[in-house]
Length: 321
Ligand SMILES: Cc1cc2nc3c(=O)[nH]c(=O)nc-3n(C[C@H](O)[C@H](O)[C@H](O)COP(=O)(O)OP(=O)(O)OC[C@H]3O[C@@H](n4cnc5c(N)ncnc54)[C@H](O)[C@@H]3O)c2cc1C
Image (cartoon, rainbow, N blue to C red; front, top):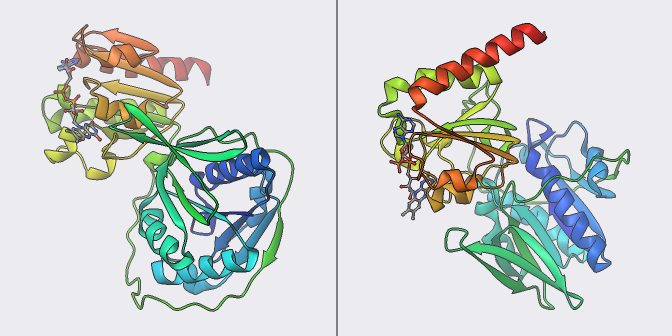
């Protein structure tokens, strides 16, 4: 049995829940195993995971689980995994997942492979693949015979096509301890799609020269309905907030469209964005490494091109609405 942990926010699944469901159900298919999901806290529609190949969802509906609590989550998942005799537990390598993976593997007396981005079955044996050296190489780990906890880097794979199936939802009551930490206040940024879930991303780097020039990036993103991102030196210098930093040490994304403006395309940056479906690069240096990873490249001054691109999109939208 493979048990996947499906993350939610405000009672709705996050994008990574569908990715984890796709991942777990594919492993189950290829290894002749079963896959089930656990959903913690209040939820509007846990059965939707059936569309992504997970036939059973265990719903532990307790409002004390609505907000992440590593001790409570660890207890509930460990007990459920034990009851279901789950050999493999898969969770997302998100902020919450990172806080849980190690604790869970200790509590379950299981092995642990964190930050994988794929799996393969070789001669009937399950292996997990993990990017190493900034994505320049891949290490393969054999799952072995014992229990295992694995975390999947968000946006590592294409979410499976949604089918018409609904999962069977089984309500569970499980006793758990709590860390004793209480959420006192939560201030959530609203309006913009969070970067890990965004399908359109406009990103800019040090080529912007200074933070006051970001107006043209925000305008372009606004016209496209895109989320904004940036390279690491930009957030390190305080030009943009840290939650916009993409790359090896930032957020890994998988949008349909990634527009990189004034970013050189260093390997550490590419490690977080090269899963994008279409990459457009705007850079004035024809030797910029990013052009090698681009589907479309514009070799020109960004201060000239970006406002014209925004204008063209505006015109296109006006003519086609
Ligand atoms: C351990 C480690 C981890 C790292 N992790 C990350 C990470 O997660 N994410 C990340 O982004 N970086 C990361 N870095 C840093 C990375 O190596 C690069 O230094 C960084 O990505 C460069 O940022 P940049 O492309 O914005 O700046 P630069 O390298 O300075 O490039 C600016 C680009 O803008 C272009 N440009 C300048 N003016 C214009 C103009 N007017 N019009 C058009 N183009 C223009 C230039 O030609 C140039 O290509 C990491 C580094 C290390 C050592």
